[in-house]
Image (cartoon, rainbow, N blue to C red; front, side):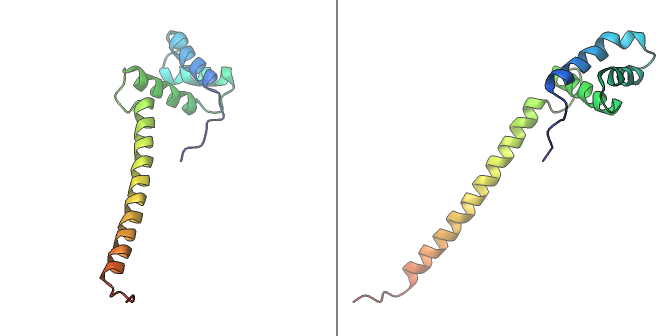
Length: 108
């Protein structure tokens, strides 16, 4: 399970906006990301790069799984796991009761 980000969502959004706004002032996108990370006090430019890439996917400018799709997949996987557990319990109960029915009755 992914741990929560130590950076608030507002800071992530601001960093992504800043990269887009100041990109023309730098020779490369990476240089832009390094500068934005330094200005905002973000530990690593790679962090900013990952935020920018995720924003591009969410906006449809880059192929990949969007944040909404990833959340839905995670929810469906959890639901599927719960249904599998419930199914196993029902199978065990069914086998138990079927065995009870097959035993000869002790009552007269």
